[in-house]
Image (cartoon, rainbow, N blue to C red; front, side, top):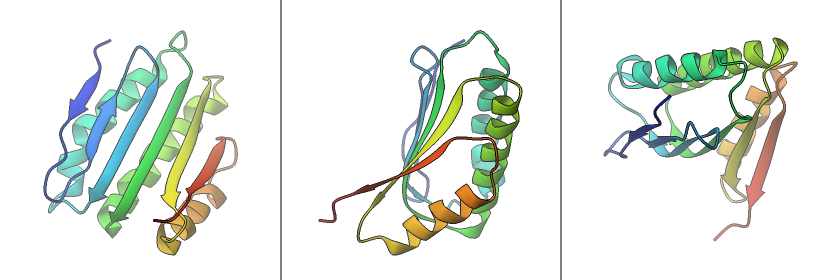
Length: 129
């Protein structure tokens, strides 16, 4: 399976899904005009990747500074997809990375984590600066 890379735009994050390492990174700000449309290829790729039982350990690594409500819905769908894969035996986890000074991002990570039961979800708070 080929990796998926999408450069960051004015209102969209960098997407770096590396099929070989299993690290699926989303970084930056996410408030595209049409989040569902922007994220469709991302969701399609993630769905195929997470269904591969023999694939490498999958780590969803998100370092999103700001995101809108449409992106929030897409992220929850992504986490639910990953949780379903984890419940089926796939080795998958989430690493939510946020700045110590970004209380909103920390709270959002905690809310996502609360909504998931079988998906390992780690919130990594980095020093503010």
